[in-house]
Length: 180
Image (cartoon, rainbow, N blue to C red; front, side, top):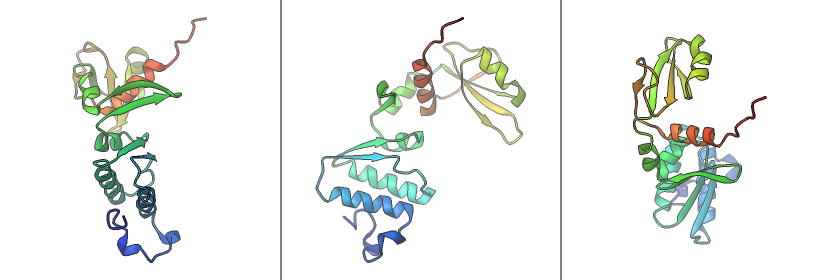
């Protein structure tokens, strides 16, 4: 198991000297001792540097060929890398269950982008179903909007991402506030 988790070279080291990624891999080795059919990992790559993160994702992928790995995470990139099935949960309820690729395909033709000034974000959020916004190097914003039709002629259709699926599922789950 230490070989499988790439920890054999560190077998005589004290666990207290391990990096975060090494502790994660050592924990997987411990979990595999009983030959389980299921392993549950919670936020397994949080706090790992990029090299350790990919090493750990590869390990989980390898383990997943033989046993069920249940991954609980907010890191959408990990879901995209590892999962062949996913569920988005909120408050203990399943909001969406699909394969990552099927969930993205459902949104084709419904995700739109536009570059705006930072000062215009609030107005766009009031007018459109803005899912996310990202800063550009020139301090403008790239916004992503969910709409079945082009919101206006300045928007461009774009490839749906797993983040879009997540934001839409959560937004659709928000309670409708009663108008006073």
